[in-house]
Length: 252
Image (cartoon, rainbow, N blue to C red; front, side):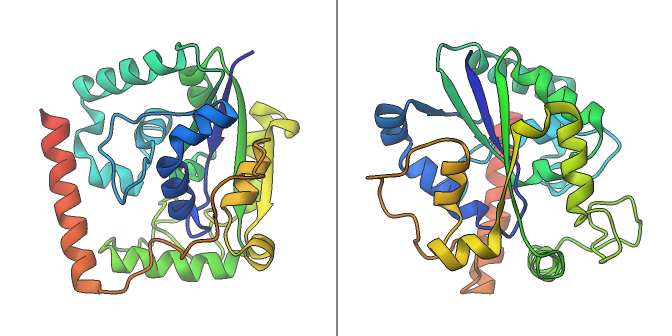
């Protein structure tokens, strides 16, 4: 049976570096490993592919997330139909192993959301990999990213912008329980961020191996971590420009 290999995050665990690596080496992955990288309907950013439509089509409409702020057209029937058709065409293609990635998928915590994702990827067998980080360290890093990107934090406990230690967003037991209740324990694999960084210097190799991909002979994966600010002013310009490009593209 054909498979859908789905990386669901979490944020601040080397996701951007992983996404850049698989995008830059997508031809090699296809030719040497039989892995096809899904081509997103959303424009490329940071020399990578991030498959935002998976999150926007699966998450409950009333729930919030960064992607809904960046792509306000997500709720329109035209955008939804375009994204569904684009996704369905590649899911139905003969590629044996189709690889997806979006760190925001870790926000899906309700069985109906995960079932909606599976329906989008049917009839492929879905295998999920998630990289987990020590909760307090994750929250510190994620809060800093939200502030850097001008996303205000929320006092609403139900919000994905509510980043308190007592909140649901860093409750990994709840995350795994939700996904495994739908997919089964054997189809939801975890890797440890701290251990991966100590052993490999990045999470790219452990993520690939968790999907069953042989990493012997592949190009180096422990490159400098992406998504780190070296020039905050330049970062702000890049973010604003990226948002404008996305909106122009999605309205066309």
